[in-house]
Length: 283
Image (cartoon, rainbow, N blue to C red; front, side, top):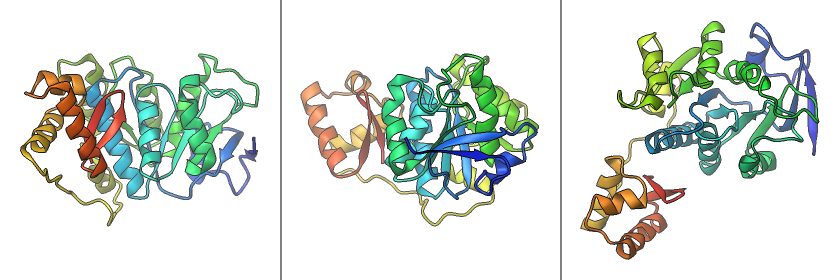
């Protein structure tokens, strides 16, 4: 593995990270840290379908607009954010709480490999051989917050570790943003509480860019145009939050074979995107 050790005094050390109150003495880097504005996206390790959908769309659009998406490569929201940025052909930075030769969790190895192959950088302050110890992860959260111009919490419960990242961002005078969620959902308690405390309410990438006073000519609102009543039904189902095939069948007149046929055609024509695990979103 072609890993660089970048000390604090090096010109290669990220400038924003250098300004936090407790910057790492050195960072180990696999890949190349993009010279792009960065936004950190964090959240629950067990997100709802709503959380996955909002995170994917937000990260995809930010990456398309030239923003580097930063997260922690954990299960759930982190993994979705990295995956979306890579799918958009953009750049992402994953901050680990272990040595770069011990990437954790193992289930996100595919993300680790894609980033290492040219999608950005995987970084850590821990030397090679360091396992993913529990106490390392709160400490690495300051790096996630320190790299970004802003930290966005898309979905998290009231005790989520992602709120530690948001707190670090606040302490370092970085913008904190949050995606509002259903008041009856425990997973929305974190971002909803942050908004009550003064975090910026955002619902899309355009909101994020506006808060950061960044402009993009790439992001334009586009309407997916259905080619049939069946496609219009699929679009309506997705917009109403029924993003997996099981929920689509339960809330429509589709049977499984017909729905699979329509979804396949819509994916081929670029009208919808497969999120995996039978989940879909409008392109």
